[in-house]
Image 1 (tube, helix red, strand yellow):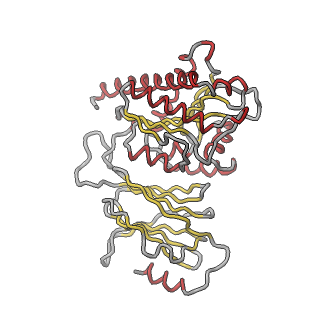
Image 2 (spheres, rainbow, N blue to C red):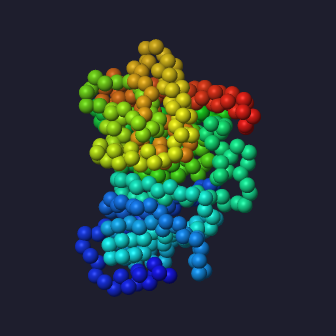
Image 3 (tube, one colour):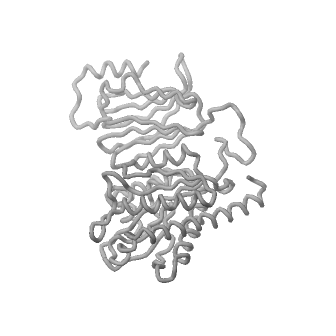
Length: 380
């Protein structure tokens, strides 16, 4: 009620200069959490989320203030969710220079907040249980098995870039988005032949935001996330294959690559690094690291000797598409579009299929290790 009264009073006042706008509000529902995304046209700083208990006929709720943002009447009716975790999403003018985001709750366990750029947006993940049952043996408070105890059945394959985002452009105009799609589709076929369930983030030349890619992954209840990319370098002599996993402590080279793959200026990767440090990655990161090690080794040693790429190793990097995922996740850079010999190979359908085959073989080896670990612990 207070939010509504304030909003009505403030809207009678002329809008101050220099404020940003709310562009769009989106939400996605998963089994154990709901993601709310508020897109803005300027960067914003948040001071954290406040939780309020149900009172005076109002539900339990979370609120978050967005300083320097004007919302006007666009979302005065709110956004209905009704998915068993959230009731509604509301936005109103709390003060002349501040918009308040209110999330009305049905059930609640915990939450996390991320601020992302290009486009500017605030992401709020609200965790809870839609049913009334207690967590099963080995499950956490949200009823989800930790990655170390999760069997590998479903693999999410992500073809980097796409649509109006070409990614890196190499020799003779070769585009990263086309290479990644070919490898991703071939990888999916190889995995299905080996008994995995495969989910694609895209199967054609379309543009997907980074959160949309992970929405696909988690709504499909994926067990592993593999993002396929192709590299580029200022020095045309650089070539080889490298595999990344998520970690806030990363090599300097990863900063430039992450900036390009994330679609942000290099300086803003430091902000992302600070965000990563706040996230709980102690469960996912070890599994991602092991997956990266196995896949990298298999790609380098599994291809025919005359086609083997240079081994650039396993590296750590702050990639949005990895940290928005709550499962073991890696990013494979399959070669350099800016190297004449490697660019030629990356145009060869047979070579791309061979590359996909070795990535799939790496997944099989990782699954074997995971199955052995589960057999020892008695999980299934």
